[in-house]
Image 1 (tube, rainbow, N blue to C red):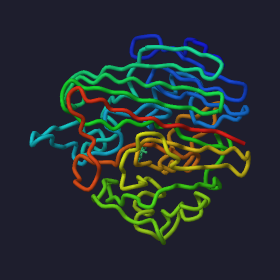
Image 2: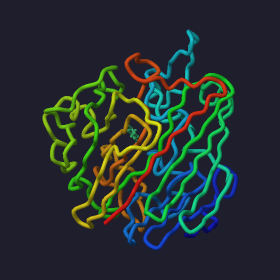
Image 3: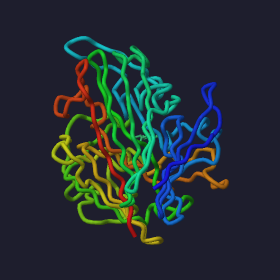
Length: 347
Ligand code: GLA
């Protein structure tokens, strides 16, 4: 196993380094800007959308490959309360809702190298970001550590640890967009299984109503493998609202697990590459690139197109601070937040 360091470019007035973790079949390039997965090659197939240069990432508004936080996904009107005290965080979506950490969340920060190494079984890099008290309105200084590990078993493992010095809310995820046929192809033919009995219906602004819905008999039933495109145009109010899938799927009503468990499996009929997703999180946001139309080409000038990739973001349920039915994402001062998510490749 190997890890190499290079210079990727410049951002936030500083040099952005990249760290490439590799084994004989797989290589993963991580950059410090947004702690992003900037490239993932499996058997030489490029399976995560990204850009050739730092300029592509600086222009990007869709969180490509990045770590998202302090709160991934949406918060209604950017408001929530902890012990009766109200907080207001940035309303960066249409000036009315909070999305993915605010105007400049963790995806727009320059993370610092904390550690890197490799041995016979793994190669890893740990990046750190310290989010100041009141950044984007969130209470408490939050230290966040993200470790990307590539294993000999072709797994990309992401371990998150975060601790705040004041009570706060935490919801972190990785926002890689996958295409197992290779960047530039469609994902509508990908076969997907989700081990999730329920999903979270949303309103016109993609904010949860606050209840769980059973997937049985709906386009959201992926409990046995189904092509992503099969029901993506179904005459279903939830599908119409999002213009495809942009929903959180849950198992065990969103409860976290102590160790990572299989939550989804996706495979390409073109390359036969399969990816298992295992996570300690109780939810997974599936976003089928419904708004993927940006004028910011991916690698080798490949234009962005709708449904060209799927993000499968392991996280807490969106807007959970405002819904009693959803597991809490409040972390007390000094309390440790952890998450482990594994993307395991095979063919
Ligand atoms: C998430 C959201 C989507 C969209 C993308 C980023 O997955 O749920 O609605 O905002 O991020 O473009």
